[in-house]
Length: 247
Ligand SMILES: Nc1ncnc2c1ncn2[C@@H]1O[C@H](COP(=O)(O)OP(=O)(O)OP(=O)(O)O)[C@@H](O)[C@H]1O
Ligand SMILES: [Mg+2]
Image (tube, rainbow, N blue to C red; front, top):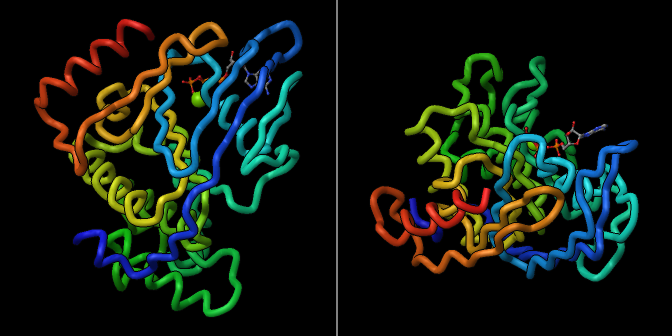
């Protein structure tokens, strides 16, 4: 399937994100300290870093699910104070509603023509005709496709992904990489992907930052042509090495 085959080219585009002197502490634990980060509209940013380094905290701040101890986050030039309607999130677990069919999970927000829209976006993620299945009969990779469809059905301008492929086997993960790259290329939303997997970051992102000790230890552009070939591109291997050294 090529990008031109996607059913919903709803190119809502992306919105820029800016973090200005963001600090975040939980009690005496300082997690993020004086963080400045500008993410241009439509960029695919990957955030890597050690466990407990504050990646999910950063994502929660961007999503408006938590507030900074000081400094601020803005989306499209406006301060984020609650969950922004143009933002959708994807987590390691698909978090589907088990007593609703696949199509109902995707169309969870309902709205005009939701069944037809759910069907189309399911086809976009490779699950054509599966709208009447129960979530329990799906594989882990298929469930993540449903979660992706649920995020895409509202044509988000920002997609935040927190380790979305961490629980998948290596081949399914590569399939999901290609799918996400294709949909992102087609729709142009701003993407922030949090991952432990440096190869995944280099395979997908325009730019990778390493979060370490509350700050940005590395900020590197990934200037490789798309669609990316994941395996054995010596330039990708060199970029991975540079990132790993900074983690
Ligand atoms: N609501 C909270 N209350 C107290 N401490 C918290 C809270 N949320 C996160 N923390 C702490 O902040 C630190 C950063 O957590 P965070 O979840 O952002 O890390 P992470 O980089 O996403 O880690 P992982 O890679 O394991 O998912 C951790 O020490 C965590 O225990
Ligand atoms: Mg996390």
